[in-house]
Image (cartoon, rainbow, N blue to C red):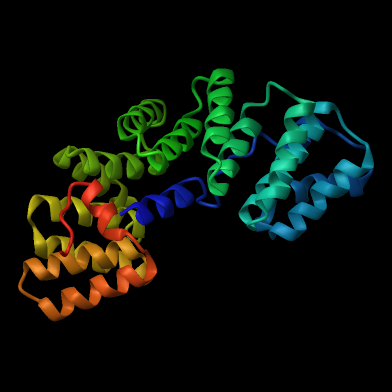
Length: 289
């Protein structure tokens, strides 16, 4: 089910990478020329501007030489967010590094750098950046969520659970934290508490594949095969290639005596994700063999 954890990490770092921007450039800079103001607007990503347009706006503002160091730090951070969202992680990291160089107290740039390193699989560097973000702003709920995501990737579930707890204490309705804690509690065996977290998320986001996948795991571990099949199927309607949901549904179908359907799901899951049997064993669910 690690593939599900990986997908969950990416989703939660990013409902658009959940990389939260700090304020707006307009608040930090008041250029006189209208084109500078337009670039600020584009760089801030207003009016659902595309990533390319956002990047161009930030670049134009940075290249203009206008603005305070803080304003330029925000521009680099915003451009890094857009580059991350479009999948250009290396370029995004350069932007976050420049943002931090301009303003070493900018917690959001450290958070975003950590999230980018997480996507790249550089977990120790991600932890270093996220630790600094939390040091700079101990009330930064999303940084705790991102750090929990790193701990999930490192199979340090107790630490992940503590970070999700802190994120929810700071932001009780933070969907990424609730969904992540549901998943972590499911792995650790706190099944009823996990179920409550997942159900709360699905009340507001009924089509969240990762959360349906988590709740499917909970039902599977509780021995509720029919409910597990329903949740895994809901996840697959949103994401047909979600290997963990295919594998989990296959196990549930086998428990219900549907050998043909179960074997087909498990075979499809193994094609997508090698070693998925080991993932499920690690999470306390016996595989198909």
